[in-house]
Length: 148
Image (cartoon, rainbow, N blue to C red):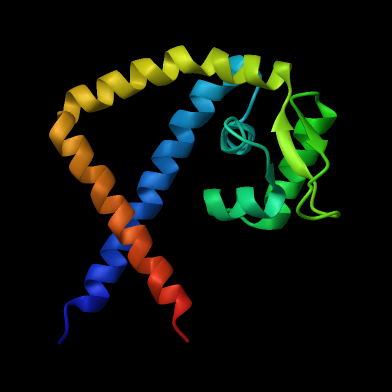
């Protein structure tokens, strides 16, 4: 009997558990700033440059509809705003407002403290290896998704 189904199941279960752990931590970090992990995730995607909802969804591995719902809430609460997209008339760009940037800035100290603790637990080299392994796994799944 092949070991591959067990490897796939093990990777999936580990990824699901890790996702749950990261979401739990992110909720705890975002809550004092009056945000949720999902709001932080969407705002974080547009801190460097405005993006259309579909671009945020691709970058974050979320559904376009889910990102649209969160983006509309962020705009409604004054944490983000839509601006015209010169590349596409209907797909507006989402960008954080000053209030959105302030909310994310409130998360930074807790994020830094957790990052220091986690990397301290693993060591810098092992943390880099974990990151690279996760990126390789994600890229492999992307490649498989591109095949018929």
